[in-house]
Image 1 (tube, rainbow, N blue to C red):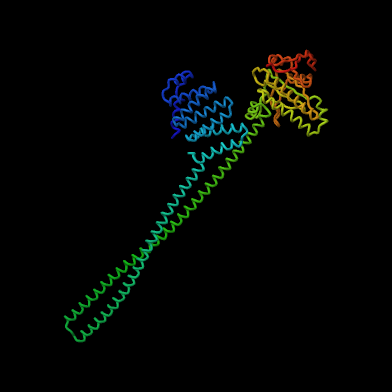
Image 2: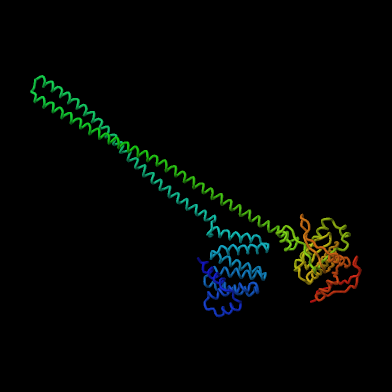
Length: 541
């Protein structure tokens, strides 16, 4: 909820009609509330970002401070990220990292997932740019740990929490079923006792029925005896009727009692059957509860296994994505080292690069004096090591100057170029690089003389003119340049003395106000006739 005020404020600022910088600055001077000042400072920082990075940084810092005073973590993180963008434009990597770190901290306080991801990505890229892969990994790991604990999306920690909740619910259901099972077992036990009692009553009634039948038989025998006696004594008819009536009443009474006893026995037998039926139903219910309990346990176990498998696959996928990203960055760096960035991007996107013509490129050729003679005095390993030291120094020198692209090395020759752009340029940087190359070789020469070892001396020639550049072949891509300008630059190198930088008249016309040059006059050039040449001595201060 802490991000809601910041989000509403940013949305309100973006939804306002477009205003000029002057109008916004005027509103800032007249602003009364701190919240209004914070919003206007943020808008001014965004407006100045593309025009003046330093002004953008100042306004972003002001908005950041106001947001902190108001405990507005969302706006504090947004303004800190905007300040880091300003430092990125001024190429101040240290302050950019400081403000990105501040943006991450306040974004985590505000729970702004999008800004966290965007800021962490920028910080990790900055660390990789500084060749600090350990720091980049730590930055990404901290963000990953944060999302594992705090993220509102489906994460591993949330899945664990859901599993624990489901497990607790299943445990409560299990306890309820066990309680129900115990209650039913108790009821079944009571029904069993009642059934035993009914069996005992049935036994008593059966014995009572047998007793009554015996009594009936005894009574009938007595009545029979009495009838015989009556007949024997020739009693009167009235007495005979009385005896007969009495006999009938006795028989009816015994039959009625027998019927009642039979009815009672039938009722008891029915009660016993009902008790056995209820017991059987209780047994079935117990079996059913047992089956349900087993199914619940199996389901919980399967859910746990699924959780473990998903957790393992997530870790594996994250590791594989990291390896893929590292390999992609490594391949990009290798590609950018062998050709210009724009050509490399076109080659990646299209699979091929279109050849381009540049009207005013400056070509630099170097070649070592007496290379074959010196090579005969060195072992192959020492020769390659010496060449590598020189060419690495040349690579370092041209990397310190803007607009220079290394083309290739051909044996002991080194070829680079500047001005490979559509607009007109002055070859000041590449001429300065040529002087620095000769300075390096002179220092290297003095060291070798001190050690009594052979040394290299180089001739350097430069010429300016139109060239065609592009990528040839489809195996082992090579960026190369062609044109008469390249041939003339090679002729400048051939006509140069060791330790000197020889430039053509065309190149001299472009840098004559930047360097002190010594005219050489017209010098014969193979297939070109006579050409004006100049030695570059030093830069004009």
